[in-house]
Length: 317
Image (cartoon, rainbow, N blue to C red):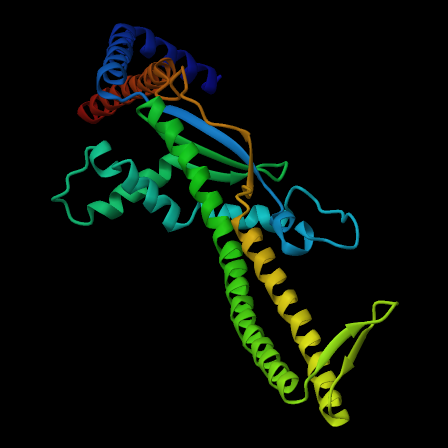
């Protein structure tokens, strides 16, 4: 009975204050609508989904495989996904976007404030999100007050992520190519030295070379010892020539492999300017504000009546 009595009393109080409660609720709803309409900026969302591509498809061993076709997976592994995730969230990418799109001015930041760049970056990172999806893809999302800018940020971020992801692989290929280029120079000097020595021996011992019916070389000269020396040098020259050609081939292959402009990411869904805003959801703001005000107004009415009863009891005591 006691609980029913208190419930009935509460209903009576609410009914007594109903116009105040309804007025406060209506006023808060109007204010919330006006604030969301005129004071809150509209934010648009753009997103893209990418998958890593196996960079092994541009390896020299894959491009110039002489033992037949090899099976190479086109898409990357989980490790490639995680690497893309780290690159996408790294400072070089986020700082590039902040500078390229002039986010400091775009956000209307006071450049005279202390640590304003740090504050701008924190705000930007709230609007820039890179996550790994359940299907092992990378999803890049950007919120901005301009739908075109949001889409441009996402697409440019993909370009920079691809560039940073490929950079170490291409750099290593160029280093290897440069190393082989040094070997080519060394092998060429050795080859030239052997050729000059053979020419000198040829003059000294009157060396002549003929081919027999089977195409084999027959070396003649005025000294058997000189002919043998010439044959040794000739064998050394052939070996040096083989090494030289091998180094040239490897150098060219690595250079070509490094120049292959194959992307390291596959764009499943490219970002585009959104037609509909992401936030604020004005109807939700108005409803939430009105509901909270209604609850608070009811609590205030109940407390007010409770305080009155306490004061009356104190006077009568």
